[in-house]
Image (cartoon, rainbow over all chains, first blue to last red; front, side, top):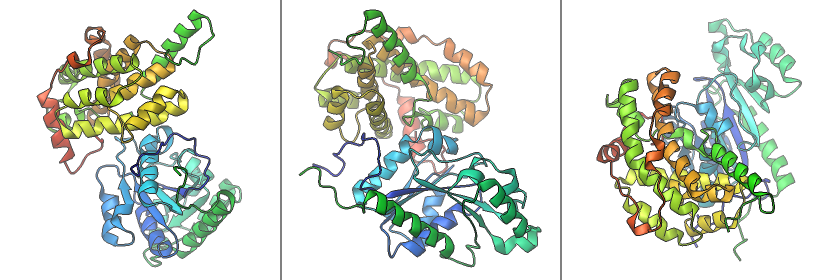
Length: 229
Length: 230
């Protein structure tokens, strides 16, 4: 039987499969740079797959392939028909298909990262698609953004504020951003990064290693499927 | 023998269930990946073939009379069958000239089967998934999903006819900023019933080709900047 023979219909309980990590945020905040940084940092120790949701083309996927941080075959690009938030929230079928195809082809995997197309502050991942999610903002969007909240900022498991190197140039006050974020996020973590300076986004990578460890503690370490035997 | 989940309930209940299931199946909110397919409309918009509601109306009428008619016939057949899925799938293959369209149809079929199996678990859907693991053609998946949900073959065919044009219409609204109410009026005026008929001989299923749609699908795959899968 082919690798694709097996049925996809089981309701996912997470057992014996990779942690699915959604990465969302507005256009240009650094989602793709973060994915590349995580591949760079985690590639040596974790078995990875990446799904991108480009808005127009396969540009994000191409960027990652060119960056040489992951085997290009482990990157799948999903098209979203003008509606990036629909593909991660309301109709996740194409993304689930992409994730499962990666797991079938290259599995067992430890972590599959699903990068959303750039969207607005209300865009969050369905729990049917992502087990955990990161929302990425950048300081040049203005230091008021955390205060404005929205589901991405308030509910993501991790909020990343990127491009801190630009803060002095755009007049963004990181203390204000940190205080406002803490207020609307109810104690959930916030990390400040400058991926241009820290090519491995090490603080974020450390957080991801932590959630992968907890996931595998709870659901088992993914290993080769044996249910056909 | 359609494995209706309403078995044991009064007939009226079963009929209502079929109609409600038809609404769910035909709803663009059904989470089965349809929102990312334009049925050639994206390429037609880019090529300047669709520029407004009048062009769109002609495009949709052509689509319904060709691809829609074939899809309706396949869905009718699938809804009333219980086996031989490879054969019906081969009949569908033979009626879709463009490799890009065949691929798009199979992708949508695979996604729909996965979604439908979680909503309306059924042995027939399981059999279809096992027979065609890479994905059956979309109208066949739709027909079998309709069967599992308790729809009649006519209802399955209606869902296929309807969804053969609604995705393209929505894509045109998004891409060209057309007035959505005008476009829905266009959708309301289409002759859906005219493409629905009983099918009892698979070898004699309609085979209405649309060379322009084939060419648009092939060109779309080769276009660098695209928002839709097909």
